[in-house]
Amino acid sequence: MTNCTIGNEYNGSLGPRISSVFVILFGSFLGAWSPVFAARHRGLGVPEWLFFVARYFGSGMILATAFIHLLGPANDALSDPCLTGVIAEYPWVEGICLMAVFLMFLVELVTVRYARRSPGQSHDIEQTHHGRANKDSDALPNKAFNGDQESEVTAGVVQDYREEPAGLEHDTVPIVAGGVQSSHQEPDELFDSQSYRAHLTAIAVLDFGIIFHSVFIGLTLAVAGEEFQTLYIVLVFHQTFEGLAVGTRVAAVDWPKSTRWAPYMLIIAYAISTPLGIAVGLGVRTSFSPGSRNTLITNGVFDSISAGILIFTGLVELMGRDFLFSDRMQKAPLREVVAAVGSMCLGAGCMALIGFWA
Image (cartoon, rainbow, N blue to C red; front, side, top):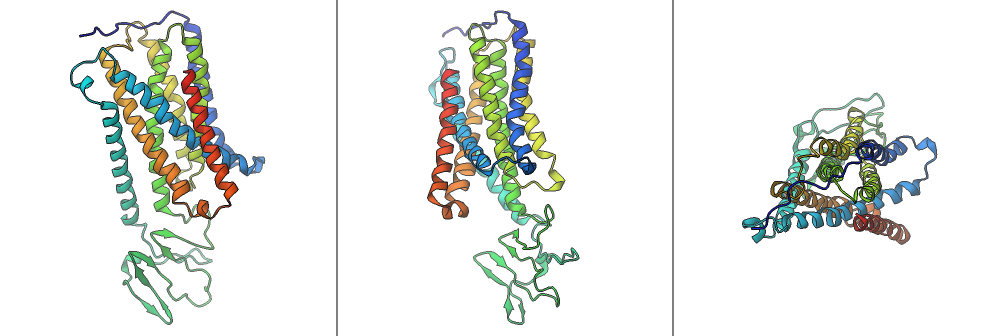
């Protein structure tokens, strides 16, 4: 049995290591906060094409993070000669990643079904100029005739075209596939709750997966040896650009007034993750051993879980919904599709290049 490495390569330079806590905190927060701030203050004159490029650039970075920054290190950790027995006899990285993908699928499935069936969301809302709302649509029969208009149930999708009250010919808000559509919709009063919950779940899980990864790289930086300076510079860029990827996805959600604080909570959670890891690493710098059996297993398992989360999010939530299942993208001009795909590839390439230097 190969002996596991005991100790770490920490060689002093405490001052620069302490500075990395604040520099990376600032870079992470700035990268994640900038897209949200710009989206909420369109009057600043930030061009729309910049939002467009940043959104798809961030998608590519998230995918590259999963494959380059997570799967690779996870495989290195769980295939280390220090580890023997059942851990060394099975491809655990791929297995854990696969389990994380299925877990994400189940979470998404339950979330979507809950959003469709939860009380208070399947309303038959009729918005008037006076802001009135009618009773719950669950009390309506599947087919109701009012004059020449009919409510039809086709393939499980309810489309309610009820007769409008006199004098309110343009104020009816139909329910379509669990979402509310209104030509007179007031901001933050009516929105597609199913889409909102799906987006919120995806972003929360994305943030969760990236945070795990960020804490561990903070620990690694804290006890790094001769490569500290290079790793320091690389991680500043890595965390800033990764924050940009998170921020663009957060900014893309239409947050209602009741949860206007949520984007900032997600941003703060991401921003403090790596500095927290560095702080903990500095606190245990005399005893922390990156090459020990327990540390290798912990890093490998959590990197594999994070990789599965980001792979599912990147392929299904980002690439799938933004391209394959997007009516807007399917009808968009070819140059717009090419620009989106090109931005995504550029983002993946930049993050992969950072991974090479790291």
